[in-house]
Picture 1: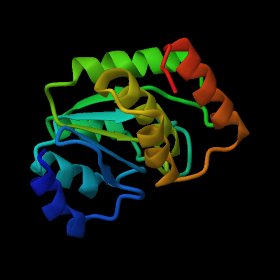
Picture 2: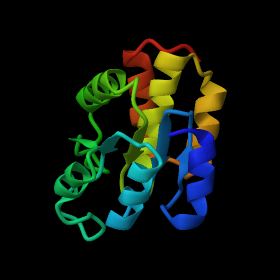
Picture 3: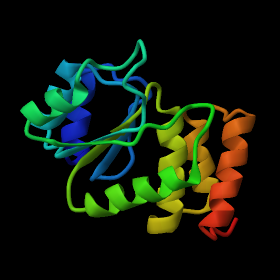
Length: 161
């Protein structure tokens, strides 16, 4: 899923807070089944969902929709008010295993994802704290829960400011 392919698609969908992070990684809010089909057509091979399945915004049986589109689906449910460090490690494992594929990562509105992705980019792609903060701030201003989580995760991962 190249930046050029994603650029062509932008007019075809309205995924909340859609960001093309790299040529291989795109982030956003909850997609519709049609938007997932557009992503698949653009070459997306992996979908990672950090949202919860039992919410009003969730796509009914997203795993089946993604599978039908011949993409790989991973679900790492992160409760918005209770993110856990263990989830960061699972996310990193899935992202590392998917590194050779075009990957779309989403939650409801790209809040959770922007935080997880910022830590991933710092850890695996050498981003600075400033770059990571810009990514998050392009989507939202983290509340106390997420600001604390980001600090704890950065310490746990031994990321330098």
